[in-house]
Image 1 (cartoon, one colour):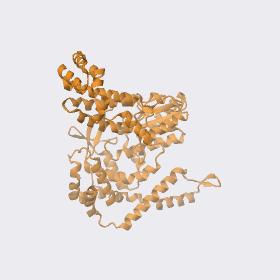
Image 2 (tube, helix red, strand yellow):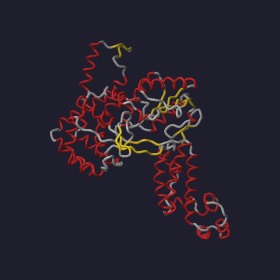
Image 3 (cartoon, helix red, strand yellow):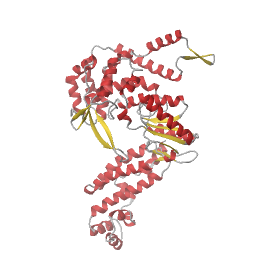
Length: 498
């Protein structure tokens, strides 16, 4: 509540001339636009039903329809004022503050944004309205890819630019999102990974047991600005807003203290980037729908489901040509393939080869989870075990929540056993000397002779962590009492809730 009051205090002064009647009219117009969008998405352009059939509209009817549509939609030539509307800015500021995030090139933190806006927002607002506002360069950072192969390039805008971009996003989303494909799941309100993998399973169950797994090569770094802006301009008629979006796309990139030109791509890390990626890839969705293909797309990860390998090869070739010619995008041939769905992963999941396939955690996702768990437990030598378990549980709870759709439980059982062994390894190393190890095991109920024999066995720490004497001394029940969460138990709880 205090955050909302703070945000409202920042922007209220610049919007004193807008009354409730104006806001109500805009809300009504937005609602009408969304309804009209859904209706148009369901009806072919320039046609209408007549006596159970379909006929083309006349030129006069098309003009009347266009005029009615224009009256029903918000004024797309005045979207910039909608972006700078008080309520929209308050929501944008709240979102940026809740997302937190690292500073950009100017070093300003999220906490410093509100005081800065109190002093400077009237000037910034006037610059945005007059077309004189220039976004700051984004800060280039590199993070390792989850598979460990190469680095992922991220662009961190300043918190001020994240605030303005978020305000733009909130206005553009109701305009574009209702027209996106039902088979698009990435970065959309009310949609997500789980919907995508469920639909993928349904396609395979329906008999489409080959998948065209397409990976776009460096998609976020290769998006052509002209192609993208042409598609944005189809729905956005406010030239001032188009210019501002174009400036954000062309904002320089600071690498090692030097600003370089940004001639293509949408920086990952920008609030606008996910929506813009859907805008340009919507052409791909519409082409697949036109061809009658079954597919699931999450951002640049697209799977097309077909009945035979030959159909898959043909689809791969034709869609690759379409992407290159129409969108100037390149398919990564090394990562793309036509294969059985159970040999590929999609959003961390794979599936069994049964006639009615079951979702399960992919082997790569398990490998990635183990790498993260190793990072956490590696820091355990100098910390108490309950602290390590507390950090571990935070990660595990989010992990099992994401993979709660898995219908195969063996991954959770095996990972539980492996995690307990990692924790026993920490204790074995913390006990250090054979005498201390023997004493600790005796304290935990191991017979004296067995404890000393185990402590002086000369085996390595990992072997001892998995041996019967450590399983008996450090039981699963004891680890649970220290706060360790069982993945299998948590998964069962999610299954029962579902």
